[in-house]
Image (cartoon, rainbow, N blue to C red):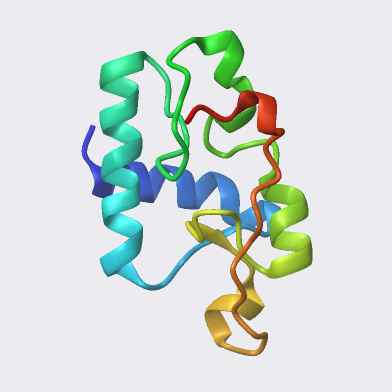
Length: 110
């Protein structure tokens, strides 16, 4: 699968749920490519904006779409990576803010 096919498949599934891909394709397509790279390397699509532990059980919370996406989009109009956004975010009707990391510190590798 390539990034364009992933985009089409996920768009069809996620938009009815109210989650849209960021319309900035210069950002969106590389993020999707990174998800595919992570899937090839680890067997699952870990968030490309976070450092994965490379152990499925440890990374379940950051498998895209991550468990933090819902609250991030609800509060900020975008997920941590700004891959998934709200309709209002894409329309420019809300202020774009940096989304804080919600992942617990003990799960973050340094």
